[in-house]
Length: 565
View 1 (cartoon, helix red, strand yellow):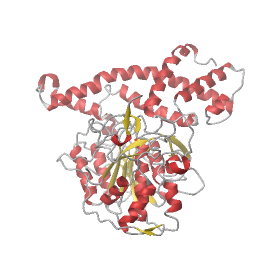
View 2 (cartoon, helix red, strand yellow):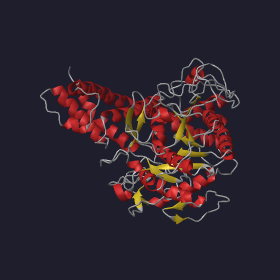
View 3 (cartoon, one colour):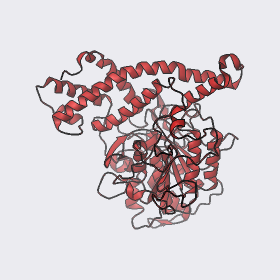
View 4 (tube, one colour):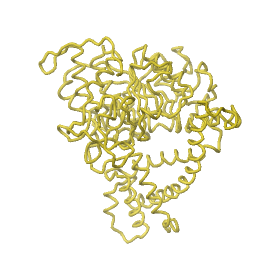
């Protein structure tokens, strides 16, 4: 087999594109750190972790906890995973597999949660359009030619111009980019086959590639190509399979964007799910398949929160006494406001105390539905934790949804928005991809190369994003609540934010996310200016309870009203 043939000529250009992708999306550290670095402490391990392990050793030994239900609104979960099946929430009011709605909540056989992307025939929506494209087509269907119909000084015309800039021009760019990257993907697949056959392994890393000594020219070319590619990703300790998962996810997203103007944006949704998208009261759709075959993201997020601790396999979650409720509502593409609003309500009605939301988008045409659901959760005392986004944007000036700012001008007291911090080794202090905001992001949490569960045969891998930082905070919240169950959602939010710590090595200036060389005070990136700290949160929670810590009586604090400044 002749490797690459004439495609070698385009390899350099593809490598440059791939390097840009991995720099912006992954922002991974070149310095090897422990796989569980997000649970560790700066004082003992020199990483910007959450001091979770320190908390277990020094504060929680011998103490009893109560179980906490954490709902994960996401893409699905591998319900068979060895590190997750013991922590799955189970609806004891339902009799599995009898085809009846035993608890009469409108959802048949919802044993571990519900799938709002499901069809009546058991299928599930994998890919959906982005919200900008949906709004672009909605305007065209409503007005025909918005440029000639809408008043040039109206808010709607300003929105139409914004949508044109988001959809029309970028689409042509995505097509060119996808065509170029597809060549790289083809070469990656060829190299994968050659190297796996030569090594006799299903996976490999840079060290194994560099150790290859052979006269076989195809193997040498594959080794050099793949080694260069993995090193350009800034993740030398990682395996090829970890790289491939993120690369394939990126390619699927790029393909979807390239084809976004070629298909009607609601076609897949209408074909598979079949609900009335404009009617929030049409709410008994979907199915009970919270697993399917598309749950990489949700499985990884769930493991971060509560994978079984100290069982000698895989990895440890942050919290040691949780039940994970999966509410499937996030496809490849942008989630629907209707699904998110109903997912929040489903989670609240079925006992969730904390809800993790590792998703987001720049448009929310039915924000009023989501606002109402957030207010419902607020009234029921449920804490919502949301990822800030991965665009390197300032959320104070660029919208990211969902958010705690209601359309009526009020603000949610049960909502935490999370940015992503790095290990602290080298320049890796704040993730370059992370969104931020002095007013709109509450705190930061580890979100670079977080090792967790992934679906398909009890596997594990690392991923980066505010999607990983959010469940770190959700895990800490669950940990605190399990030992101090009397805390309200507002008090729990207060504990997490008040105990968030500055960069532990005294660093005050960091690289501004989205910039290669601009420095900015870390304190200006979020409301608290800190990183979530499990040890500090538990100590503060104890002061609210008036409990002894290390033999010292703590002062009880009364919290009458806690609001965002």
